[in-house]
Image 1 (cartoon, one colour):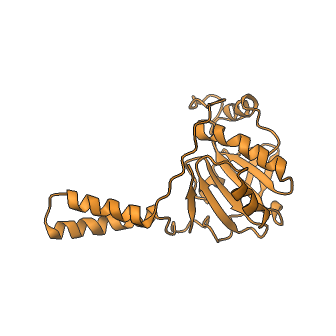
Image 2 (image 1 turned 120 degrees about the vertical axis):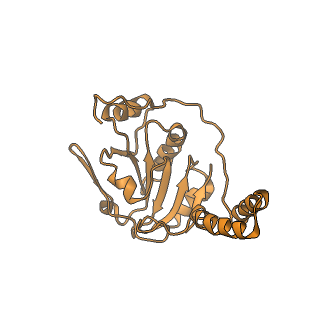
Image 3 (image 1 turned 90 degrees about the vertical axis):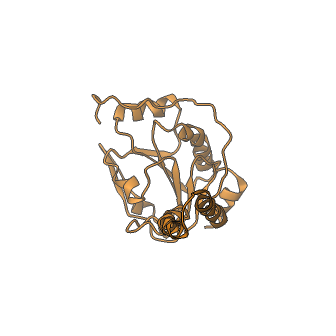
Length: 214
């Protein structure tokens, strides 16, 4: 799997959401096999211990390294190259079924009102939808406060894309996503082709050309 890192109810006291946060530079960092291996070796060499203890420590660190390098996440199906979960999201009278978009490329974005990088990313998602009207940009919030969700959309002028609140949080859990923003590019056949972690410039030539050629 290739994972890209570029970069309630009304009575509940919700975490403050972010509005109009100045956009910081997007950090582009990758976890590589070499960097993880170097980190493990550094740990082993700096720990004063016997050879046997170092071997045991290495065996304990190896599964962690595997997870960091995006190994299969157990039973979760939301992996690059696999069929996207056929999630159904209901919010009052609004219902969104991912299967309804079969035949179109879907840019599925998971966000929350308490996520500062999400504010940075939304203008790019909106502009992407404007430039490529034949695709579907679907922004799913897993907030726990409907009022914060609605006010966030108003304060940050989020329009022109499909947005929905998933209070059940079943959709983001189906994609094994709990730390927004995370975005999946799903091809017209319903296959996950790319995953992005962190705020992205979705109007970059590389990303737009990739989506255009799906």
